[in-house]
Image 1 (cartoon, rainbow over the protein chains, first blue to last red):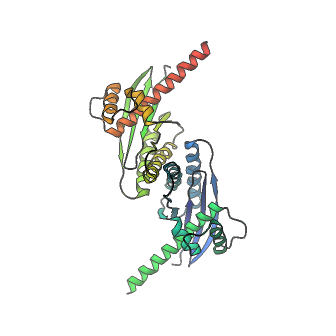
Image 2: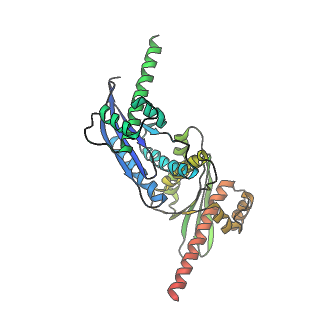
Length: 169
Length: 169
C-alpha cells in the first residue's frame, strides 16, 4: 500500500463536466488538478469538447484509475439522453490510455465524503477542500469530480485491506 | 456535382450499432461497406467496442460526411440514457477524422427511403438493397445505417440544387 496511485474523478454533465485528479498514497489524498469543462453549441460540438478535453487530460496526467459518477435516473428521457451522451463522451476520452473505469452513484460518493448520501453540494465542496487541504474555492462540479476520486481511493483501499485480511486468515 | 462524396451512416444502439458507408456521385449511391457492431459486457466495455470500431472504420474509409440517426424520445429514461451513451460513443469515434456530422430522425430517414415515415424495418431493408443493388441480405441495423447515409446524400443534393437555382435566379 506504499505506492502512489493516480485517480481521475469525473462528474459528467451536458453543460458542465467536472474533473478532478488526485494522487493517493498511504491513505492520504493529494490534489493534482481539477476544473470544469463548459460546453456550448450543438450536440456534436458539446460532445467533442468533453471528449477532447478528457483525452488531453488523461494523456498528460496518465491516471491509472477512473471514477465516474453513475447517472441518477429519476429524470425525464430527454435529460437522461443528454446526460448519457456527455457521460459517454467523457468515458470515450479516457480510452486514449489504458485505465480501469469504476462507477459510483452520487449517493454513494456523498456518503463516502460527507457521511450523508443526501448531502448538499456546498457540503461536498467544503469536505473536498478540507480533505485535500485546498485553500481556494473549488467549483461545484470540480468538487463532485474530486469527491468521486476520493471515494474510489477509499473503496480500493478497503478492498485491498479486506483482501489482505482474507489472505492472512 | 460530379465529384464523389463518401458518407458514413450510423444507427446507434447500446446492443447493436449499425453502420453503412456509401459513395455518392451524380445522384447515384454505391455501397462501400456495411455491418453491425454487437456489444456485450459492462457499460464501459460496450462503449469501448462502439467507439473503437467506429474510430477504425473512419480512419480506414475516410468518409467526408456522417449521418447519424437522431434519437426517438418516447422511451423511458433508462433506455434514453443507454441509447445516448451508445450514440455519443459512435460520434466520438468519428472525431478521429474531420468529418461533418448531420442528424436525421428515423421518421425523416424512412420517409426519404420508403416514402413513408412509419415504414417497417423490412421495408427499409428491401428499399436499401434495391437502391444500392445489393444482392445478399442486409442486417436490419446495417440497413438503417445505409438508409441514413442515402437520406443525407439526397438532402445535400437537394440543398445544392436549391443553392444553384438561387444563384441563377
